[in-house]
Length: 419
Image 1: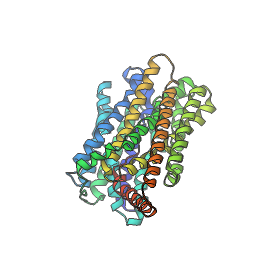
Image 2: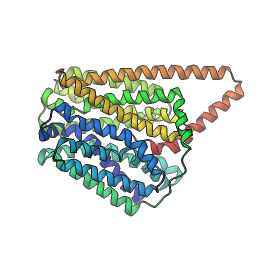
Image 3: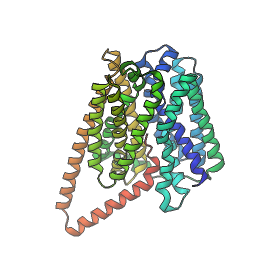
Image 4: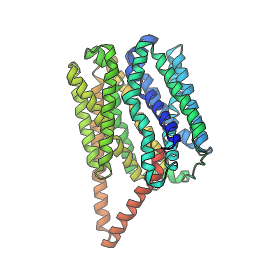
């Protein structure tokens, strides 16, 4: 394994940790600043919105820099943002730090995946990209529980200081180990924008907003729910977040194996499973055993949606996938922000800490409806196209479509950050 991959993996680990750490720190952050739990939940909302704005903005900026320079800039932003968060004297400054760090998120995964793919032989590219993204998944199993432990043993500021140290290590690793590589010419911006005229691209983005957003309706308030509703001790949040992380890793791995062959069935199954898991968590949050099982299932089914949601946008934007892929990253995070905000509203309305799960159920069911509509329209278009073409033309269409998808995977995976 090239050592440069280790630098990218460390950066991905830090970014994953800073995104998800808040779910274990929310009560501490609220108490530290003297704000309510719903208001503290905005630490998740503003981060997600920062990714929505930052992913396309930093990607456009990155076209004028080498990949190595861009990765160093992103890691620098990440370090600064987490340091601001760690030392923030008031809550508003803490939110500003979250926004700064969020700007590194989407573009780092996009450009980092391109670099990872170029570090190895062509037949090993998928493995290299998987290695970098492993940092994100491991962050949920190891990083978030460790961050929660730091908060409990010292304070929540120590967690973000530790994340900043990870960012420094990532920066130094990129500077020392990543070779200088120019960014390849991108598709003309007009061509990139034109893919959004495809109704299926819009439907895919809407599925992402609603489908994955449902996960964050639950996990944003996970620590508060588990301690105040379920009755776990605060120290238990450490291993509870690890359970969620293990579910996430398992769901993502299983979905990844089946998505290439059965994309829409995998999407339907994951959305149905997520809706049922969120409903079960809302109904049985008072029962410790049931709460643990259901939060693991929320992680598994929630992250099982990611491969089909990302692949679908790449398939339908195959001609110019970069901006659409970055847009899908933004859609993931817009859904996160929307769910966290709506969850805070229902808590503030006096419906209880388990109520955000029902926000998640609603969003997921709506996503399932959009998926059914998109799948139906796609099948009708395929039948109509086949009826208008002869056998030879039909075979040509299939081969050309397959080539587009393969090409999009190679070009667009770099811009596809999974959260």
